[in-house]
Image 1: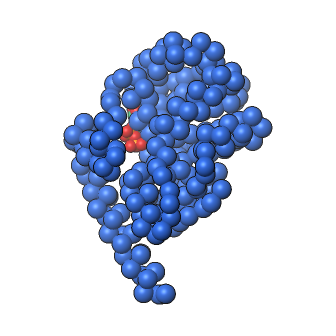
Image 2: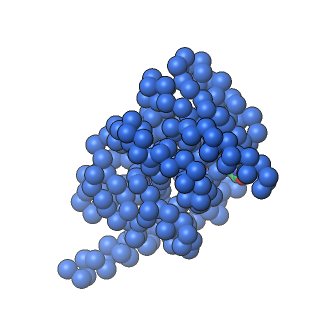
Length: 243
Ligand code: UDP
């Protein structure tokens, strides 16, 4: 596994992330997977707890095109690994191997819809449990007790960034041999509540534009994208000047 640095955060490059994760699952080694994009990188510059979690994660995949374009500008020949696609691949492998899965996050009923559609798609899928992502302290306690009892092999946590990363860090010890992945808004896509950008947008690094069209209230968060470009350009110029 090769490791690169984007504004102080690690990014891991693998030939096959899903094969690496399947191996971890098989060996019951456990892992925390972070899917890094420009927005999260900029958040981590202000939120030191988030930065610390990303630095400690076992696998940080280049989810966003901003990360990939920056690493390519540094001469690295790498491709994107969208977190939602990686999660789908690992769910397919888990279904075949009968590894158990727990889904946490999304609005009430969203994960139920996801589980229904997965059960239709994969007859052998093993769902250990599920819970929506809007819980108070009492419900959270119940979820933690459930996780400790169930010990699912794979945990998909979709509570949004940075909450899901901090949540995984806080509770990972409950299931130390499980693979935990922060999946952001993937449950909304898998349930059909939202749609992914058409291929054209992704191929032209414009997925953010489609997201803005679908969720216009995100405009303030998206200001972090030009800020990311500014920061990586500044860093590249500094590195060149030092050579
Ligand atoms: N969410 C949740 N609990 C919360 C806040 C958010 O389960 O308290 C879910 C929300 O329903 C959505 C996901 O977290 O499914 C956040 O999606 P978003 O696309 O904003 O993810 P991000 O860009 O933060 O990865």
